[in-house]
Length: 126
View 1: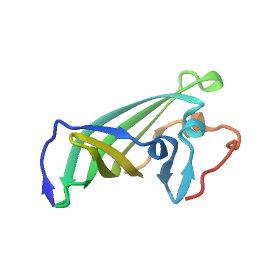
View 2 (view 1 turned 90 degrees about the horizontal axis):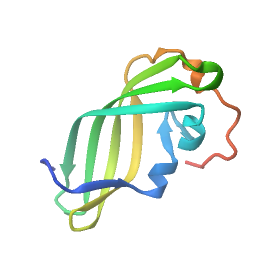
View 3 (view 1 turned 45 degrees about the horizontal axis):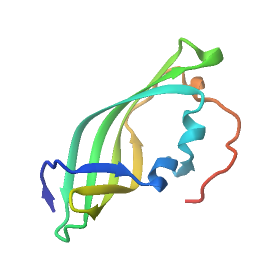
View 4 (view 1 turned 30 degrees about the vertical axis):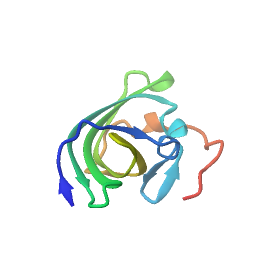
């Protein structure tokens, strides 16, 4: 494995955009984030390129701050964690996230009820 910086862009695949894997549950991003406005600050990132030149892994730490809407206006929930990604090269200088796992680190700080919403319209199978 080779760790280095890159000028390549990393984009989410449709599969990654639509799912979040956390605590053994698969949730749709749209459902999970609908009742809030969210800001994710990405910090330390380590990218490991594999010898095949076509795959890599990345770990990125984050701080996610969620701001309540509606009846939860004015309330905030903050979470710290890391994204663990599997990457694939789709063209020279272009990489896509094939799979993302989200691991929360420590307790969430603030009002967790701001994330509440009715049942999802559909769930994706893992």
